[in-house]
Each structure stands twice: as C-alpha cells, then as structure tokens.
Length: 319
Image (tube, rainbow, N blue to C red):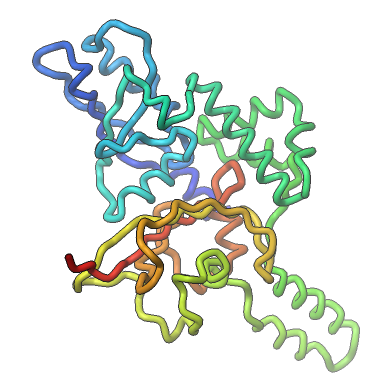
C-alpha cells in the first residue's frame, strides 16, 4: 500500500512551450509551468495549459498535441512512462512543446480530449482482465457508475477511491508461485510433529525476481550469471552509445515466466555487444533481486500494466 501511495503521489515538473509557428503576439508568451501526475495522461493537462496561451493562438479549431525535441508524443501512454522512456538523464523541469494546430494524423491516432483518454484507459483494463483471467467479463460487467468512479479516481489521483472501485474487478494480488508453494508446505508441516523447521527452511527458497522477469522478456541482453557477480547497471565513462530502446508492459507473470504481455520499441542496433545500463520503473531504478510480485503489486499503473523502461548501452560504432 505504501509503495502504491508513492506512485500515485508522484509528479513531474513540466515547462510547456507554445510552438513558435502558433505564436501571434509580441513578446511571445512565457512557458506554462505544470506539475503533471505520473499516472495521468498529457491530454488531461489541456484545461490547465490552454488558458495560459489562449490570447496568442491563431484562428482555428484546437487539435492539441505535444512533442519532445520534435518527437510527437503518444497521448495514450502514461505521462510518467513517457518521461522515463525519453529522458535517460531526468530533465527537470521537463521541456515539452504544445501544439494547438496541425495534428499529425499520420503519426498519432486521433484524440478527442478526455473521452478518448477514458476509453483508451478502459480498453487497457480489458486487456489486463483478459491476460489475468482469460476473458474481459470483469470489466465488461462493470456498471456505468462504477466505470465513472474508477476513471474519476484516476483523474483526481485519489488512491482510496481507486482501490474501492477497482476491488470490484476482482483482479486480486499477484503472488509469487514459489512463495505460495512454500506457504502451503509450511502450513502442512505444522500438522506434523518435527517438520516445523523444514517449513521454516523452505521459506528461504528463491523467489521469482525482477531479474528473472527481464531475462524472460529480454534474454539477449542479460547474461546467465548470478546477480552478485554482475557489474553495476549504471556505467560511467568509456565509449558508449545510450539508447532508450525498450518499454515493456507486463501485468502478470508467474514463477515460470508464463502469461507475459509485452510491447517493446525495437532497437535500431543489433543486440550483439549491448548491455542493460539501467532499468527504471515509476521513476526509480530498483535492485534486480527484488521479488517481481512486489514490483507488480506496488509499481503498476492504474490500468493494471507494469511499465518497465530499459536503457541500453551499446559499444561505440567507429565510422
């Protein structure tokens, strides 16, 4: 619960600039300063941003979108995930450019404001439901009022309201399969004299870790060696190229690595010689030996997906 609370209270300081092609006044307007919730979405900031720039916009119909260093940003990806993916060395404030004209329909799917974001969120919940339960019935059977309550809890960053509404989905808590087996064994052992110690020893067994999950999802970038023998993930100096090339979304994985849902941005480089420089989840760089079940239960986004951002280090390519 405490980990979830930190996630829900997380925010990114932003400095939003109006694109120069849409400035119609002199001097140009100063940037807007916004504190954006990590679990939120960029279109949900428009009601805060538009009044700041309204007096300088050219005539026309608003079609709002954002870019970072010229890259149009996908509005349906949570703001915190975009920041972790695109800012290898965290930039504070994060400088984005807002556009009110010229929506790039060839690059971004249309967004009609809050309604589009809401239905994208609900569709992600359906995907999570299917992966966890094998069908979408839990989400499909939610009443309209429950859906509204759930969505408003996300928009308002209200964790208590979210837990109350999401409990009706019956997604449950992800537990490590090895831990479950050990607990069952311990319970049985208590019924037999002299076996209590054995049950206690079983609890020291190896759980399924974040490292194990990454080895399943990205085996080409992780050597098969123990964590204690690994070099630190963050490397300093040397000739290297850094590429934020992977974003993995996963919302269920058991101890054998089954039932994985993932989407990744392919690296423009071959995997040969590449190493993982850092792993970032919700703005933090967790130790890889942490139990994966804890990561999922505490660091997942409200749509029940866990977004893992991986920064890769590549050897310098000589021309």
